[in-house]
Image (cartoon, rainbow over all chains, first blue to last red; front, side, top):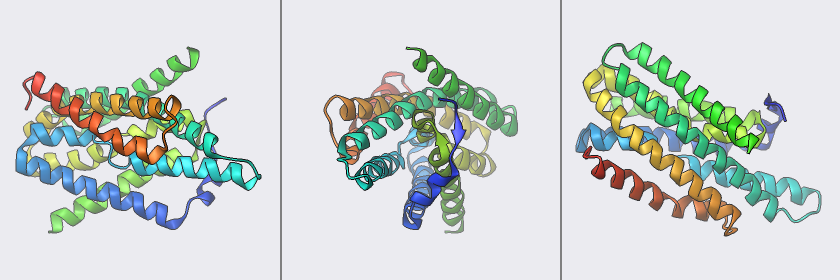
Length: 138
Length: 114
């Protein structure tokens, strides 16, 4: 299947689900900053890769996939778990990309912050996509 | 207080943008990549450089590499718990957090970063 956008999927998401993710993301950003202030950048840096909103996201993925199946009168528990597992597999590949992102920040940020952020994002995108293409061939 | 509010808003916005991308992108296995998007890092690092300088951010970046290894392992563990053990997503995701802590702090200490 080709990569494409399905904007209709946004209609299935309730406003409070957007709010939960905004609040969790905001809270984790504040907490990561507080940890870096209290324990230093070495410990604080770890939490820049903490799976803060992943539990909420994967629970939503499971719930939506299950509901879609149940609306057709079928049992959706298995479909929900399969959808969540696919999401988790993708996140594992995205995690590989994040190693590249962090490496670029480490190597470049003292030279130029803008260059570091642009290069790091490019590393994340390219490593994640290459890993995804590679696992599809397996 | 103002700094915390700014961080909260920027972080919430960055996370929400990546989450919406994950919602609309298909197939779902590709959308899953955005579950490990560096949204909090992107939001935080800009503020860190302006407030504490680039050296501080570089040390954070070095530790983040270790955190990212832990994130990849965590996501892989959650995937296995869902596929092989048939756990519910919320149980697998929350129990798996222990994997993140063990690997992040284990590797960080082992590498002499912490």
